[in-house]
Length: 530
Image (cartoon, rainbow, N blue to C red; front, side):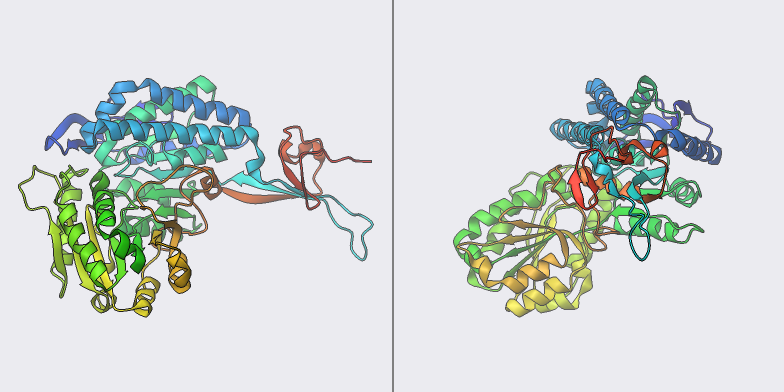
């Protein structure tokens, strides 16, 4: 049942005087439940509880953390249709998408449970002492990853489950041993509260410390600002706009003790279609990319918003067919009137630029908050000289850039901001003739796709979801997959420490039987002492 209240640890609370409601964009009406914005006292209580919980939770065994994560997954599943209906009423997204995203959320939680139960993720490294080494004896040194401390996670507008309350950031932080305070996204606060209730039940069922999780409501930026500036918060996770992510990054860097902000932000995900592929597959590629551009109403961070090709009859054929195919796709509802309004404004801003041509736009009447998809095209020199055309238009929009030659194509790619993905479309091994283009793409993106589409992010260990700024604030880390746990930990070394007082991961006997690097050899064997 949705109450509209905040979870301060395991307790519901509504001390704030400001309320707001979520919105059903499909019906174009407000939902009925009022949500209470967290009061300053509730923020302080949540952070203080998290700081106390950290002292216990950071030392809980991998087996117990795995039980906790799996129980969260079980409790989310038990919400059943209530969760699905809330998701749909607050996002305008279809039931099939809701169920698919729930499946992904459950999968993420269980994959982290498997990771921490096995335990080798801590990257234990041991160099035993050499007291007789000349000219200086070598000390015994042992290193492993330890959790940073309480983490604030900001829910994402476009993924009410997989990137929000119990999404990838939260699951990874719990796996690392960090308490989490979620700043619930105001567009799907009801869905967030339901998932929060599932986490709280899991906390209680598995005996986790009160305060290991809290969920705070807010319709503005003030609560988020207070959380990021609080001295007991040690890291931040964010998925959203460049403007929002950069604001949090700046706040965190100006603290007396700066903390990391791991933000996944904007991306236009450039697609390069090479000449042979255009010649052989122009019509088929147009159909494929019309579908990809409009998938999820273009509201994916991996939406292909920029298509690049060498000017030719084949490129013209592709552009014309893409314009025809894009208008055949049924329009769909956007997440919220605000997002719809921003899409329309950014689309019009792009169209009003000099020398840009609209080649396809849905012109029939549409329901409120339903997006009219659009494709435009422009010459390479114009694109190079106008940075406004480089900016993301969040929604079902893409621009095709007609490059004069290979040199101009390389220059355009090299001058792009950092991106989450880049895609190369090629035929008959022609990719071998364009090493500079491939190198330029690799230098600007976090993931390079060959003969595919960027929409779709597989959750697995080899996935990298991040990229050079502003795709993310730290290109060394992924926001998806088990390796995203590395954002919430830091390396810590013990020198000449008594074996009995060491964490089990570093003890001579290796009681957890994890894989460790011992004297430069990867092994699960115990360390023999004379």
